[in-house]
Image 1 (cartoon, rainbow, N blue to C red):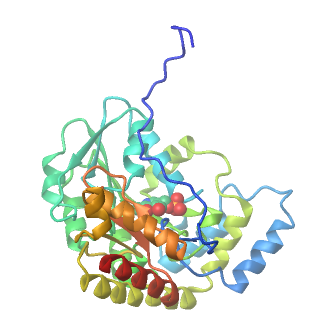
Image 2: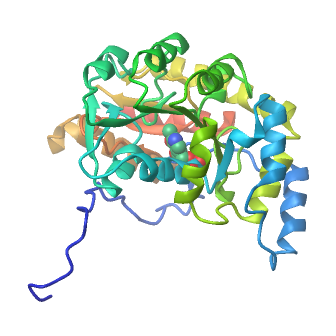
Image 3: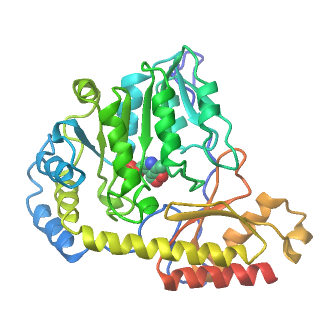
Length: 378
Ligand SMILES: Cc1ncc(COP(=O)(O)O)c(C=O)c1O
């Protein structure tokens, strides 16, 4: 290209590339790297998807009125303070674009969700990371890192990839202690796995913060506990004054018709969703117990996934002179080759020795644990 090539406004992010290879034994591939639910949408939701698909010549409702009305009813919120998005990821993006510009600081916790640096980078803001204590957000460290240039704090709770949870009262303290000019975004994508139900105590406490403070936003998603990740639907609860602003930044019809209808329908299945959440939470406890009996470093999790790292090297890793990061990669390959299970290799600086996997059905979890146990004994 010539010397006069276009000069982009931002630098591209460097990411660790994912390996893409065929399963060597022809086993079905089970992806546990995206923190999804292992259950298919319930029959009633599948029916709605089919019905709306037959009317795909029509746009979805740009205002998502039916979905917002249902959400407001279930969470006991004002529907006029809710905005739906193409996954909560889209909402994080529009919030970033509404409040951050080049020269501003975006503050996150040390191992905060990877989308936060991505959103910050998109708008050319400066990312500031506050150190954590044992992989948990430290409110005092966040407060210490607020400067005159801080415009936005993103907090995922529970956090991805660590799975760690900041106690409700600590989040409340954060909301009370920050300057009113700083926006606090509380991303509760995994909140249902804290309360072990939809709209439990912690979730309600987070939404109360939006009612109490003019600078707090809560985001939620239909991708995790509600199990419709592929349709892309999320929502956020914002102070009233932010509505025209966020609506200015966003696209006209962000949530497609099928996603809107399916998300509305899944809200009629709360009892079943609660049962599914309970089963994931009980499998989570079982998996953590099993891993703790092996030479594994396991980070305490309140989400639907576990971040952990094998500690004791095996003969093969010794032979290859691998460090813990290399050892984790070896384990990920071993799992894929022998079970078809794909786990996530943490890409964040400082977490390279960890793998992360979603909690699945008892059967898949057993296969995962058996294979990890074989690996450790080699
Ligand atoms: C912490 C957190 N927030 C938000 C999201 C985005 O979810 P979605 O865009 O599917 O709603 C994810 C997805 O993995 C996540 O881990």
